[in-house]
Image 1 (tube, helix red, strand yellow):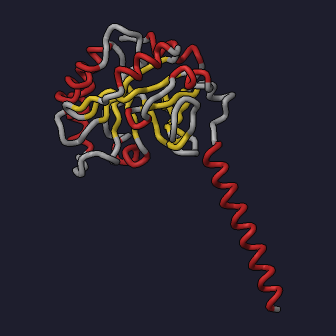
Image 2 (tube, rainbow, N blue to C red):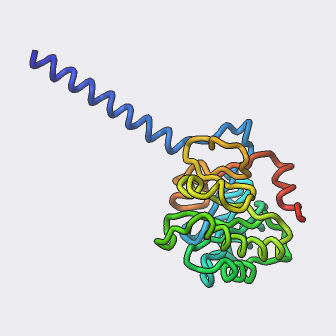
Image 3 (spheres, rainbow, N blue to C red):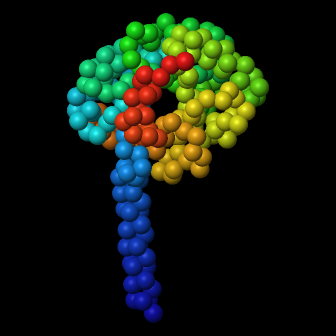
Length: 236
């Protein structure tokens, strides 16, 4: 009986180890169906460090959204370099702003508009709404909507394009149905979003791409090359 217990214990450990290994492999290799979503992109900031954009472009990456600003006065120190080098590597490029809950939306719009160039082809501007790394206060949807509109109005007028709103899972649950209606960029790790009104889907937060040391967010675009071209060219 004792030997049988030891045997079953060993078998259980083996199966548990296999399950863990399988889960680890699935997590690190997951990618949406490329037949449905043929274009892959990344979003980056200074946290990715030095990026070799030529190698990134050669590793099945078609577009990138680059952090430009945060709040009313912060500028990502790698933005200008990343924007220049990503475009030179042939990627479609766009810029995003991290929206803080503790600064007026109008101030944040001025920051973004002053940093992001207006004379170059860009994907629609993105405003990033999430709780992680934000001010501890959680505004009511009505309060957020007022400040968000104060941001969106000047930004959309400056760039001539409808902005895209990035929402994490938590922010989507709290705000998606109650803030300004805009195209969405949804974060849904390893699981396809349960709604279909999105432009970008961030499906991985610890992906790996040639040319970047360490983790990077991975995304797909809903649509193919024509959709990407339309996003670059579309204007009011």
